[in-house]
Structures are given as C-alpha cells and as structure tokens.
Length: 125
Image (cartoon, rainbow, N blue to C red; front, top):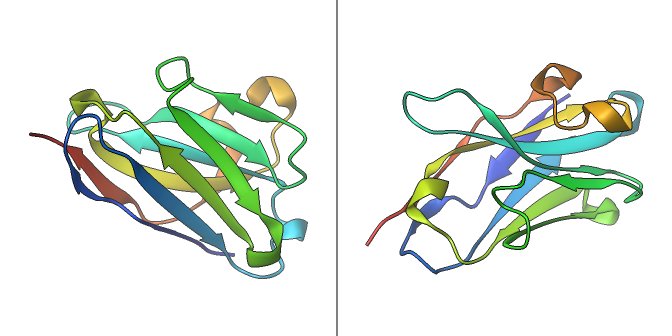
C-alpha cells in the first residue's frame, strides 16, 4: 500500500499551493482516512488535516483552519490539500498518511500506519 505526495515548491508569503496525495488501488481494505502532517527542520512532525475517504469527517489543526482545505477525489484515489495565504511558518516537509482512526484520534500521528514520502513546501520572500 503506497501513498504518493506531490505538489510542493517555493512560494512567497500570501501565495497558494495545492498538494496531492495519490493512494494505490485497493486502499479501502487498509485505511479509511488520509491525513496530512508536516515537519519543519528541528521540530516534531505535526498534524495538519485529515479526511475520511467517505468525506464524512474532516478535521484541521488550529494553525491552518480557515487557510487550508482538505478534499478528496474518490474516483482518482487522491486527497488534496489546498493551502492559501501561506506564511513562512508553513515551511515544512509535508507528508500524507493513511490509517483507520476513530474520530477522536484523527489528529494523532500514531493512528496512521501508512506513510508516503514527503514533499517540501518553502514559503519565503
């Protein structure tokens, strides 16, 4: 089971960027939730957003609420993270992950056992 993240790059403060996380076929038997986490240099990996494949539950970290939007295209087996009004503090390597967490654990890194490689987002003027 694989997750492939893409879409990172160098942008200026205030710009937008959309990340994609493509899941391998047959995902339904392995995980029902996809999340985005990020890790800045010297810092721990932190939760950003998560969504059920069904679209029934969506959760965000307070630091990105109102600026980032997570969505999914089930036909393409892809989860997106639309990031608007980017700030320098959003600079990090972004990872997507798959798991089967209960609602109260959707923000917990230990809930996710399937990880893709990261994609680097740099916000700088």
